[in-house]
Length: 198
Image 1 (cartoon, rainbow, N blue to C red):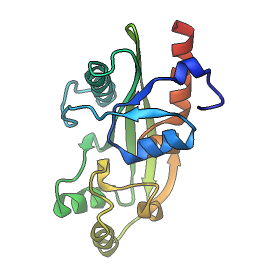
Image 2 (tube, one colour):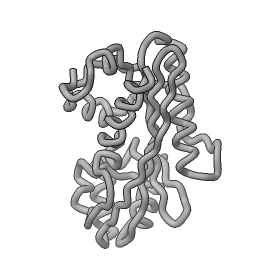
Image 3 (cartoon, one colour):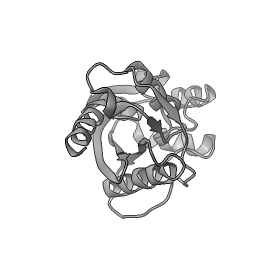
Image 4 (cartoon, rainbow, N blue to C red):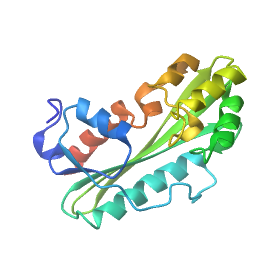
């Protein structure tokens, strides 16, 4: 259990995500939880507003898993990378990863995560967090070598800030954990809001 939250608020928690990064963040915070990935397509466009879209997708993921575990508290999230009003999802292949990383070189971009907490009987708290990430200039050789490590695959924007791509980051503005996949400060605010509505 996490020592900073009441036990009844965090008990019976289900993470509706297959992300090993989100799982690791929760484990490091002391949470005890079950993992049940949602069965939804992550690249759905439900709104032209990127922040609204990740909020909607996080909520849909939570509702999807709530059907399986209706008496538990569901935590779901969805993360995207935005650069020049273009959404960068998970690269399909090396070529796409290369183009994504080249577009991020020497520039700033936004990482936006929608987070949903859904608790019985029908309490829903849906929020979003945005962080600005600034890459230094990275060479084509560096990009190619990074792709060769396979780290870019399965990650929005084709990079993992907590891994080898940390060498590309000049600075960030906002929550680091949001870039990893789960904004911790926001999550605690949401748990406290859930406690007040209980």
